Amino acid sequence: MNLSCALLHTDAKMLEKLQGFVGNVPFLTLCGSHGDPLAALKEYYVSKVDVYIVGLFPAAEGGIGGMDFCRLLSSHARVIVVAATDEYAAACYRLDVLDYLVGDFGFSIFFQAASKALRWFTLKEGHAVPSYQENRTDQVLKVIYLRSDSRILRLQVEDIRYIESCGDYVKVYCRDEPRPFMSLCTMKSMEEKLAGADFIRIHRSFLVRRQAMDVIGANTVSVGTKELPIGDAYRERLKACLSGLTLL
Image (cartoon, rainbow, N blue to C red; front, top):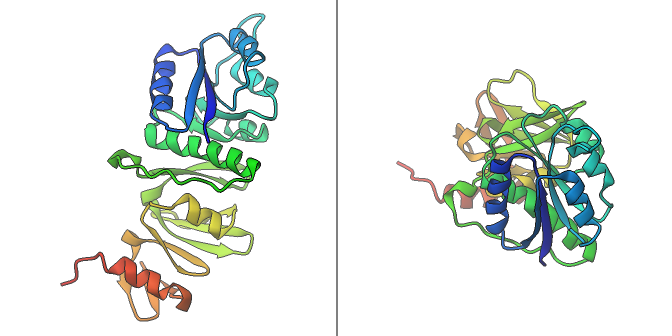
């Protein structure tokens, strides 16, 4: 599947950066790049756009801002927002944006957002979701965004120690955090989100970062002072993971 993509950002350097990123995504085709929201809106109604990447900027006198532009797009288009801070993240998610990219993000983060768009359109069409394998070393997932209470948290993947399933919720335990972050999310969804980020499912209720495992016993894995059970259905998967380690 190939998706048409258009850009709107008032910063010329960011616009150039996004153009380069789109050019490196095999399933995106750039069909427009704009610095003027009114010109972008006019072009949008002429040509169908699947994915619109929109920067957040204030409205000029007599014009529209980035948030206004998002509201004017049809339900067909999926929107990826680019912002300097996470100040408007909650408001954007209420607009059902696909992703919210903050600060000086790299291609890895951009590719993950683009992949969400691909999955959305593929599932909408009722097709199997294709897998795009990245060879570059900079494609390793480094950051995830987690909805917790009324906040959207930016978590460094390397700070996550393990994740516990609690029905329709998950608890995310992070280094140097006294309490876990709770989010309305399934364990399956977290496992898919963290695929390729060095996490392993050891139990129906536990997903552990491999580098956080301090002791691996016959029936438990210790992460700090916490002992997590190893489920029978996941024992072989854990053994396969350990086979790549150098044991003395």
